[in-house]
Length: 78
Image 1: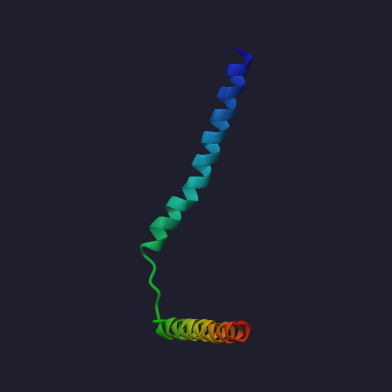
Image 2 (image 1 turned 30 degrees about the vertical axis):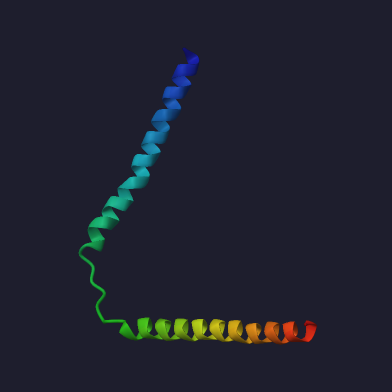
């Protein structure tokens, strides 16, 4: 009997805690629907795109140079 009361109590505490944690999330969801971004931030997205293009180009460049080095080392061994 005592064990079931402890289990019931801890279950109720967990339910109340989860309900209390979910309440702010519901309020935030309602506020997010009413928000606007205001000014367009297209320049930020453009800067990130350019940075990613440079990073991928750099990786491809390294891979090509590594391939050339491996090929020249293979020619020395054979």
